[in-house]
Length: 259
Image 1: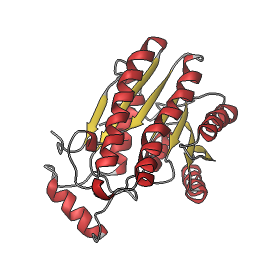
Image 2 (image 1 turned 90 degrees about the vertical axis):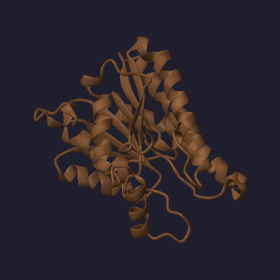
Image 3 (image 1 turned 180 degrees about the vertical axis):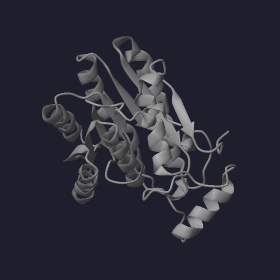
């Protein structure tokens, strides 16, 4: 259980949080969770409509949120995203770099364009975000970054070679940066979810949503798939003071699937 989530006073009151991929799935659940604990949240992504719906739902619960359209593959858009976050809310304390894509297919049939889309979004996008986030945080007393990896970085999964490679690289990047910047009070960690019921969760060709859920639940030692809210709880823990001595770490949340 997340200690921060049980604090009725608002564990993140006054904090500014940036969540990429914030329009749906794990990103949306995490944005809601931070807002419920008093944070001002910037939700970013490529789909303006989903971002506006996210902001409306957060504000409908009494939270504070702003939407910023951003393609994390673009250095210029990432720079603008961080600048706008700081401009609107006066700073940046916590970032959840969650934007990502998963393309399913045999490596032997994967096109160069497909490979580049996965790598440029999942890996290069994380690098571009971290570069600007760290730059701001180290000049302003510190902060926390949580990168979204995957248990696919720890185990072999059919038809997900590019995705697995991108997430394994995110883990390596996280460890290196976590060590480099901890002395400047910037804590950087990663979270590696297992199967979670979200819109991005990849299906195999010809597989229905119901079949996907059934198959993945059967393949998990826990006998079920995770929820976006469960992953959000762990992101909040990594961002909380309770995790103050945790840096350069990968928190695997997959019901023992990769153990």
